[in-house]
Amino acid sequence: MKLQQLRYIWEVAHHDLNVSATAQSLYTSQPGISKQIRLLEDELGVEIFSRSGKHLTRITPAGEAILQTTGEILRKVESIKQVAQEFSNDKKGSLSLATTHTQARYLLPGVIRNFIERYPEVALHMHQGTPMQISEMAADGTVDFAIATEAMELFSDLIMMPCYEWNRTIVVPKDHPLCQVSELTLEEVAKHPIVTYVFGFTGRSKLDEAFMVRGLVPRIVFTAADADVIKTYVRLGLGVGIIAKMAYDEQLDDDLVALDASKLFQPSITKIGFRRGTFIRGFMYEFIESFAPHLSRNMVEEAYSCTSKLELDELFQDIKLPVY
Image (cartoon, rainbow, N blue to C red):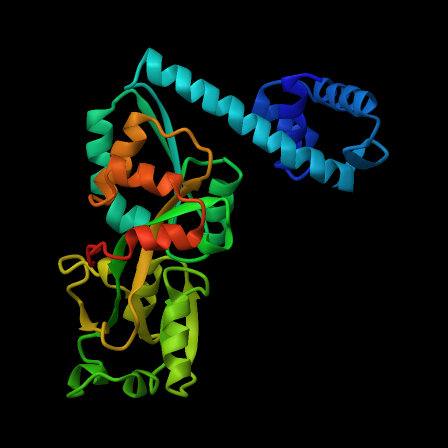
């Protein structure tokens, strides 16, 4: 059994069983990958992939179990590389993170600019996706860090730490009737069509919950993952926009009126998470602290040592989070 063979089956499984695409991504030949997979299956005495002719069709039950262990092995190998790099050159390496559009567009630019200035030899890679995709990428080791508000609690292998608290704002054109109400309420908002985030994005669950508690059924006419897209359709008169407060820019969005909705919805908490067992390099600790100043190296190490979600929650229960 060779490490290269394990890497091949892992990559094939993560390229939708497309050996050709895997070969391109690894800069090798398709026949070479197919041969090595066959050799590994012959050695193990089981099929990892089912086949129809020359095409792989699915992962077998044995393959699923083998791939789970393979992922753990490859992550350990990567940790060994990280340890070696930390001692050979603590200012050189790579850092990958997965996040949503809202974080990438509104909260991270300053943090990333400062990080790159401090660590010019660290290659920074950003992946965007749904909160579920983001959490999966952190859980399977594709990225070092996941930054999101939703879905991360579904993955028990992730150590999740609270970064900041935020709430929502309602954006409307300047002549909209909501600008004239004496008190903004959910009942008033529900009278109008609504443009907001796709379910599962940017604290959308808190929004739905608020209307449900009041027995209201909001008329959501358009959803998007991107706050800039939501604001575009508000400008077109499609409906009332409900977005993260941080996504309203007083200068760029001065044609829209922002109505504070923090009393209408429960606040949401954005968290940063990494897979348990990840080797955290010095510059990775610094990135976390620059994004969330209360998450010092000592605090992250304490979180790392927690063995349960309850213990982790207790660690942060008295921390006063920044509010955006």
